[in-house]
Length: 449
Image (cartoon, rainbow, N blue to C red):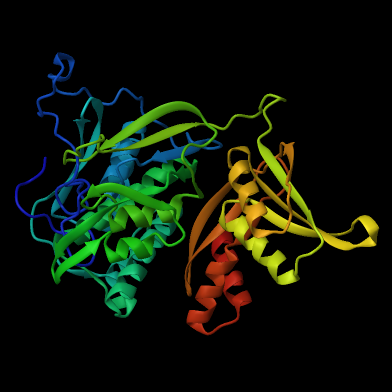
C-alpha cells in the first residue's frame, strides 16, 4: 500500500509523518505489513477482513467510544480504527463526494501489526494536487452539501490545525497552506474522521498521548519532534514520553483527539461491545503500531461496597487565604474533579477552614498527599461516595471568533445543559477585542442552529 520514497506531509509543511497511509500522516514508524513474516505459523497467511458487522447510523448513541493510543495517533489510523469497528466505508466516501475533489481514491484493506489484525485506511493519490490554503479549505467545506454535524466537526478540527500552523510560522491563519498531496490527505482524513464520529454518535474519550523525540525533515529544513504544530494542537491534552525516536502523534491526529475527546484517561469505566484496530505501516521495536477503538456501554451501577469517588477533607486554622487558594489550585492541577473551602468555627472558638476535594477513587492517595503537602493540616479524612452524573459530551461549534467547545449534559433529567468552555471564550474574546458574553452568545447560537 505504501509507495517508496519520501512522503509528503499531512499538514502545512510536508515533513514525512510516521503514522499511516502513503500521503503524509502515515505512521512511517508504523508496523509491518500483512506480508511481513511472523514467527508463528498462524500469522503466516494474509489477515481476513474485519469481523465486525456494519454499524448503522447512531449505533453509538448513549455509548462510549474509547480511543486507545499506546503507539500514538494519526488521521488515517483514526479512520481505519473506526472502519474496523464497523463504520461503513460508504460513510467516508459519502462525506467526501460533495467536496467535488478528484485525483484520488480511498479504500480499506486488511492489515496486521505484529500478532494483531486490523484495517489500514488507504488514500491513493492518482495525480498532482493543487496547493490549498486554510481559507480555501474553509470555503470548500462551507460550500459543500455536507451533513451539518460533519461540516461543523471537520471545520473545528481544521481550525485547530490551522491555528497551530499559524502560530508556529507567525503568519495569518488565512495564508496557512496545506501543500500538494498533503492537502488531499488532510481533507480526506479530517472529513472522513468527522463523518465516522458523527455516524456513531457516541461520547468520545481517549488515552493520554505518547510523544516521540528526534527531528523530522520538512520543506523548510529540520523540525524538532514532537512537531511544533502537534504540540500546539495538544494544548490542554495530557501527554507522556514514549521512549522512542520518531513521530508518534501527527498534527492531524493531535487535532482530531483534542477536538473530539471529552476526557483523557488510561481506561474508562466501560463494558466493551466491539473493538476496531487501525494499523500503521512501520514496525515499532517494542509495541504494536495501532489505534484501538473500543465501543461499549457505561456501567449503570456499581456494587455498594465499591464507591466511585472519594471526598478528602482537612481542617486548618493557621493558613492565610492566599495559601488556602493555592492549595485548592494545586488539588485541581493534580486531578481533583472539584475543590473547595468552607469556613467553620473550630475548637476554642477559632475561625478556620475545611479544605476539601472530590476525586476518583484511584486518585485519592495522590490527592491526599497534595493536601498534606500544601496545607498545615497533619491529617486528611476520606469519605467514600458515589455520584449520579448526567451523561456529558463535548461538541465543537464554529463561530465568527473561532471554534468553541461546548459542554453538553443530557440524560433523563430535563432539557440538556449547554455551556461554552469559558476559558476558550475568553481567549477568543481577547483575540477579537469583544466582550466575552458576545463570544458565549455566538457559540450558543451556533449550537442552536
